[in-house]
Length: 356
Image (cartoon, rainbow, N blue to C red; front, side, top):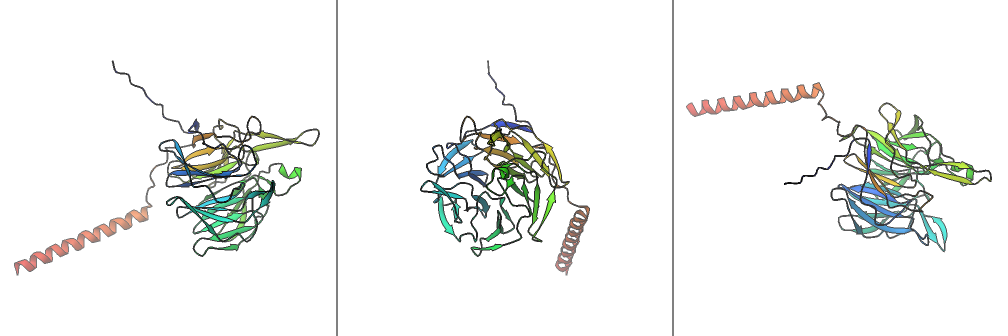
């Protein structure tokens, strides 16, 4: 008798647990290169120092491996990928037990597993509203909009965000930067209450506009965009916190399992399946339009979590191959006809020459 077992394929709009992060962390950054996810920095368990750990996750084998640590131990920093290198900038470090905001820029090359130092940011920056690549520039948006040019290793400054925010989510779709929710930038308790703004920056015009408000404002969520390869183009905002004050004025944290989905094409929102683990200060990355949510904190049972959960987006697997516009099809047919005619003429001339 032959025993045959079947593995049920994961359905669209569902979550599934994957191999946990070796180092439980929150407040860290992740970057995707060549189908691998790099989880870098963040808070560690005992909080005596911030983390510099660099761990690579391979979704194809569901395995982790440790790589060269980041030179600077830090949290709440910006992270972006350009030409298969990971750029890390700003954030906080610990100096004699006290937090200090920095403007250091460091670059990781996975090919050589080495780090190097680049030009410092013109402004100190942490809890970035956005840290993304558009075209050949890296945008580090906090209260400032600092732009890094890897080709010249130099920084410039562009139009500031209309409503400065911290603890927000961000993503890029079709060359525009979307800054979603978060909290007002500041240190007073009232500033920690989440807002539901969607702020949109267009680098081509150096201008800002507004999009539809997120259904539930959250602090410290994470976001990533699907690019249309295996799922419709959308921005997935997962997890985060809602906060309420108690009778003594203390802030009560409520970690969320929300999957809030924004469609830039028609400026609308919907909800996806709830994430299994309620958490905030997590990080997300996408590989082939599959969304991986890693780490974070639940503010209750553990300060930092090793969770690694895979989400297959709404409509995953239903994206059809793009059909060429009719004008393009006509153009291709004309070119093929010309090639055939020219080929036939050349054959005829060759034969006539041979007869002569």
